[in-house]
Image (cartoon, rainbow, N blue to C red; front, side):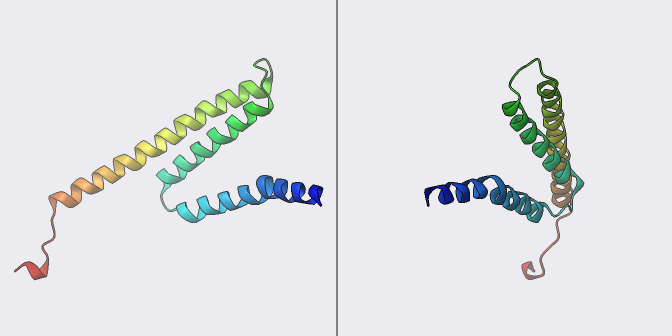
Length: 107
């Protein structure tokens, strides 16, 4: 019975939870804005690369070096997506402040 519980916990940790996480990220983003998609892609690439470095800890292996490169590319893509989103949000905020819409009830 103890082995069954260990198997179920491992199944939950390594299969079910990552699927639910990917589903939640997809439901949150819904791929509406390309800037958020770029941010999510960069964050996912960074996280996967960090995980790959755990499995290949030797700095002389090709996989470790490729994980380092993809980790920095993911970081740059995530930062670029965040900056793009922030710049669009700031532009939208300043355009709505310069054109205030008067409410009908304020007469």
